Amino acid sequence: MSDVAAETTGPLVGIVMGSDSDWPTMSAAAQALNEFDIAYEADVVSAHRMPEEMVRYGREANTRGLRVIIAGAGGAAHLPGMLASLTPLPVIGVPVALKYLDGMDSLLSIVQMPAGVPVATVSIGNARNAGLLAARILAVADPRLQQKMLGFQDQLRQSALAKGEAVRS
Ligand code: RP5
Image (tube, rainbow, N blue to C red; front, side, top):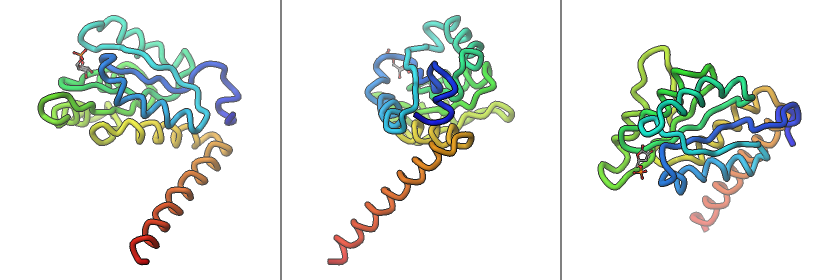
């Protein structure tokens, strides 16, 4: 358990999405957090179908002890930006690809935020990177978690080096 995680009993990261149909994409964020032993919660909080619950989630997230929000949505993907307008926490947006438009609609809906209301947007469908970015944000105040991240980065390096060796031989 990391230092930050040891200080709090509840989840540190909130993973929210517009629909349960986003979960096959968003579960990769949960998987990344599991790898770093970071406690999270996951829920459906639709900006359009349950706006009042979305406002409550955004207003209460920081006082409930969350440190980072990961928000995924597809199509008219307003959830990450709306949450960013309601909370002082960092919000990471995940554009979810739907049947049409290949997720470009989701990406542009999430990334084009007005000045003053930032959403850290990952690439289309890349919820794993959202989980890893949340881990890095938490690691800023958690030396043990940062060591773990350094170990993870070293594994990536070793794996890339091995691929080079395989190509050269
Ligand atoms: C968005 O509409 C959700 O985030 C989801 O990506 C998309 C489709 O939702 P469902 O019709 O599958 O519930 O708000």
